Amino acid sequence: MRIAHVITRMIVGGAQENTLLNCLDLLHDYNDEVLLVTGPALGPEGDLLSQGRAGELPIALLPRLRRAIHPRDWAAYRDVKATLKSFQPDVVHTHSAKGGLLGRAAAASLNVPAIVHSVHGAPFHPFQPASAREFFRHCEAWAGRRCHRLISVADAMTDLMVDAKVAPRDKFTTIYSGMEVEPFLQAEKRRAETREKFGLGDGHVVIGKIARLFHLKGHEDLIKAAVDVVQRVPNVRFLRVGDGVLQAELRAKIEDLSLEQHFVFTGLVPPSEVPNLIGAMDLLVHTSYREGLARALPQALIAGRPVVSYDVDGAREVTITGETGVLVPPRETAVLAAALIELALDERLREQYGQRGRELFTDQFRHQTMTRRIRELYLEVLNSQSQPPTREI
Image (cartoon, rainbow, N blue to C red; front, side, top):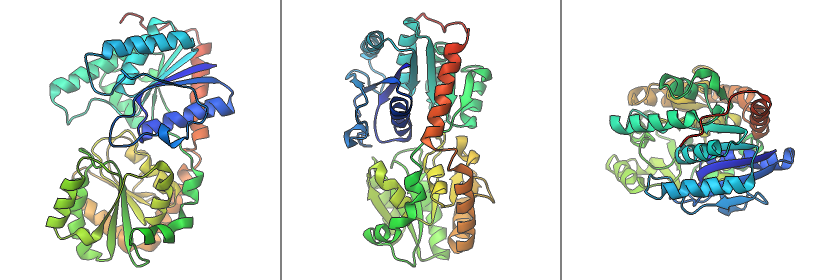
């Protein structure tokens, strides 16, 4: 098959990692012709493609394809359409809000036989003004009529999109976001070395959080909960993996609470370092207010680490209270603190939850499993007699 993936930017992030692995699997395991269409990797997260992992994957870099809404979006649409017209794909698979909107519109106008969009997270959410939320919901519904199928990274994403009347339920398929699982299975190997690098001793209980230092990630909630955790578990250390615009503000709050000796910031790290960092942790906490299904959760479980997560979007599909970790109501910092204290004080329980998570999710989150299921979906669309999506733009 000839398959074009369209995504707004290839920053260091879950949706981008998912897309790159899918492209490389199609290229190497199935001998498909693959083209990755993307805009510049602008932002503090870093450029995923600059790390050399794309290898010989053909890439069409379109400078006018950007994340933010801009008057040049019409020109970006023309660029995407011209690129697809030249490539003549059998399948166009789009990702992200802007890439999904422009990519699906261009593919539909060209009568591409199979048009698929992945929902990594909804672009509309309760934390937006009502007018913005309705605008983005309308955009997704418009684009939803211009593709044959939609892939959700969690069942919760399907429920959200169906409830918002983006598309009917039978248009969705859940395929969990794949990853390289072997490094996480081996995460323990460099535990001592990694802990020493960040000043963490054998006697410390390390609670990790992997997230951009950005809004809606719940960083302030974790700092508030940390006050109670430190009182009960003085040897606790919070390992913050990631960087972002809130770093100075968060550091100031930590200092105001005299918690600076309990927090360690790694800064921006390449994805290849994440398994070692999870191996250095004793458990992982996830406090984002919205996220399709944070990759850090299955990554930690595959590494044998229990998780404590806010009950948002797809988190409950891997965070199973009493089995792989503890699910907490969002913003309930006292409940969050209690869950962290319980696991920090009970090594046996941490091991039990972590082992169960590894058993449940290792195979489910292999990128080869993801790509096989996605390719089966492509073939299903290509072999069906379904009507083409709406063409008008």
